[in-house]
Length: 324
Image (cartoon, rainbow, N blue to C red; front, side, top):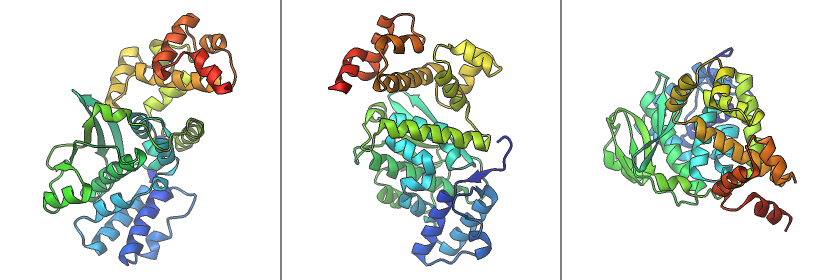
């Protein structure tokens, strides 16, 4: 990260404090005093919290327990942004982009393997790795289920490490198939599941939270490449890949490769942001012709075709529906 020390939101640190309270564990005040509302918690302090909590809990599933008890609010604005998106895939793409708002120590990627989508977690910490990975992956399963009204049906949860207890215990606690020693930590689910609507979808709130999350990343000096690309697209909708890549001091080919490492593509990012901009502008009362021009489409007909693909209706029908 650039400019600041690795840290996590105090809300995620509080998840450990609350888990300790439920178990009747008293954590050292020398550590807990570092968890101050409204202030980021140094990653080194978070390491100490995990080590002390797991030591006192003396439970091989201590991490899994924290993950299953995690609430959306523990993920700060990134959690609220995730659940306010339209579909599960939109929410998971937001998680990939804004995970640093929650904390450092690991990254997410979203990729396709045939008919499956894989949301993978890549840990970078060295303290209580298995427990923390289990907490992260269990929280993903739980929150994805909650956000979709329990419609989410994942296929398999993969873990890089070996099981802490019998695999049957994990299957029972998580309610799904698990596999260990897989060399990676991934939640696998069918591509169709990505289109599940989220029960808390709210486009106005989503856009507000995205702005808030952007500001947080900028303040941390830790904006992902996909975040930088999205920001440039929103500022300059008419720019193509080569122009955006030039602004980021790299070639278009290099930009494509780096985005692929995040499980994304320039086309997907640009389409997503143009879609959001178009909806926002039409809701604000702008004419179809103006929106088409502002977003850099060569002609209004091209914009109408794109908008119909995004929303299933023409922009003029969408706009008239707002007033009706």
